[in-house]
Image 1 (cartoon, rainbow, N blue to C red):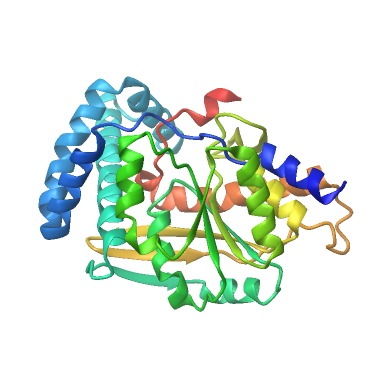
Image 2 (image 1 turned 120 degrees about the vertical axis):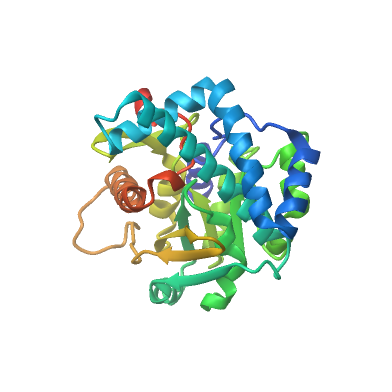
Length: 317
């Protein structure tokens, strides 16, 4: 396969608009929450509790998806307990969003961030082939980015995310993510262009960070998560197989009030130059997806309410 063909294939299987749900409340509501949270964080949390009531009552799809997800972790609960757990899931999601907004707007945010597994990231960079950082809609993934240079990263960083200028919520995030201003954003609004940019960045030896837990459109790869098959986006794992870049999983978990931990997994390789595997490309892509799912599951079981899963992932299989 030629380089251009490989890039096109990776692009076709990389993110498109993979989002669960529709942004609500718009630019000024988000700005008001940021203003309050930046000054009195606990007051922002108080408002999150009321916002969660709206989502619990009126966003039925999200409520049902949360219940289905938590049923896999906590089967046999009473109806009242299922409702309460889902409401708490929505509260936790809102708190994570508020924390993220506060942490990304200014370096003087007052949050503690520790790092576990920094040596795995150092080893990955030493390979000299670029680095793929995989994460999920779990915890506060983007909050790790401003701290990444303190972890010894001296390479350009590209963050793969969806950006739609016509969406008020997206405009809010784009304007107020000031702590990400020194990082290049690869937008997935055009999946072909995004895929080409991802492969090009890795071939230059740069770092590419992307989420790999949502596959609503485009090609998908199956993996086992919480005891059943799910479909994950093939793009991130195809990029790992095509580029041969080392892969680390990076998650930022909320430990408590203003306390977070960035957790970095061991480095893994999925290129076609690994001795002794005898795997074809499809097998390597499948192995990468399963490794990702197993890492994510370990954290889900530890922090079940921190996965922003409001879409029934298992219903697609």
